[in-house]
Length: 155
Image 1 (spheres, rainbow, N blue to C red):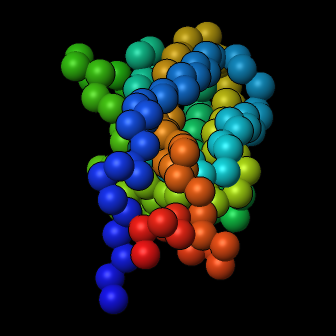
Image 2 (image 1 turned 180 degrees about the vertical axis):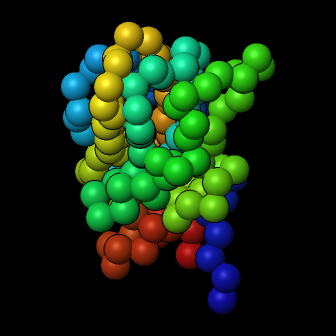
């Protein structure tokens, strides 16, 4: 027997997509930035835009999660030493990465942005990035006693 929630049980609360922005500039020290993600969140996409070419040698950025530090964006996908006139976005959706179609987080976690400034002259460079996410837990729909995600009243 199929189980469906009825129209009356569907919460009408809007689920807005949130976007977390970040910026890295020349001279920023090597670091891994942690963006907290709450349980029940779906990360749709990550992206970076190089707005000013970096003058250092071999700078790199990658976006991922613990254990898969390049799951959204691989360092090899981002060219930090040049800027195209139309400022193309390097997106996790376009790259053949582990999380190119997004990733669901059933427990609290973090998206990690790992920055390596490179060597040599660090007089120019700017990278802007974003993480697009939304919480997909159902408000107002109680789980059944057996842990089934559908409410008992839908059986």
